[in-house]
Amino acid sequence: MESDISPSASPAASRDRFAAVYRILTNAIAAHAFPGCAFGVLSGGKVVLQDALGHFTYDEGAPAVSANTVYDVASITKVAATTAGAMLLYQRGQLRLDTPLGDLLPGFVVGRAPGQHAHLVTVRNLLAHNSGLPGYVELFRTVNSPADLFRALLELPLEAEPGKRGEYSDPGFMLLGKALEACMNEPLATWVEREIHAPLGMTATRFCPQLDARPSIPPTEEDTGWRRRRIQGEVQDEHAWLLNGNAGHAGLFSNVPDLLRFAAEILVAGSTPAKHGLFDPSTVARFAERQSPEGSSRALGWDTPSDNSSSGHHFSRHSIGHLGFSGCSLWIDLDAEIAATLLTNRTWPDRQSQLIREIRPAFHNAVREAL
Image (cartoon, rainbow, N blue to C red; front, top):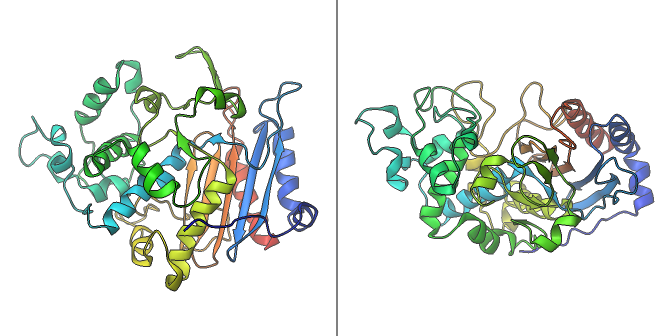
């Protein structure tokens, strides 16, 4: 199943063809949207662009970014690990989308009276971000261990009836990761590495990089408020860090070649069913379907293009993707058989800059126009 995703064109030819992409990213670095970036494009089963610009930080003498540089991809974890795991479990008959969360994590309903909304929350609701759970709660400020955080997640009150409100929920995906572990009978990180990343040749992708690998990963932040140190080679997300880096919502580290391998596998199943490998075409189709409520852009685990999407104007409605808080993104057009990934550490040295919101759609528009 491992794909050969070596670039199909010379660097010079790619620079000529994607001149607008290079201009947008070079200007972004000059504007301090991020100190450096790695990026790649897959089209027609071939890598037509794979390169990097800039450095790890703005400091003089900082290491240069390469196309193989590993980044903290933040919430891309939700698709490249957690959703991918759910897809494979579903395909193998080990996971039903309409299983109540309380069946997999009984602590979620213990103490809640029958008829309360918590009893109605399903795996599907968590994947679709319509469970009624809050979008974000700073639990890390009041808990000190994985067990305490898990208990706090289980006890979170619902803010809406399941299925009635779409709200992107980190707590929902933290609980989903734990629910999948109940099906896997092992930690999410080890299961996904063995069952998905290793078969696809994603050798640079992992949770919790080794200590000796950390200097080769761009730092995400000078944390002056909580950990009080430079965050480099350890997950930036506070809740994922409390969960020892093994979480359903964040914690994955990866690079451009590996994410293009993952995208290639999704495209093979989604666009050319006769050649499918790890994922069945029906699985990709099921997880790419938009979910309730009306107006939500969320599919199962994946996002789809909305009116002001980070994917720009040219990705079809039949596209799936996801963003990462650290400044990373992955978008896959199932109709056009195109994928694009952009990896940055836009949170360096702090989380203030929002320029990435303008750069992402401009990057994707330039990619599609070059193709």
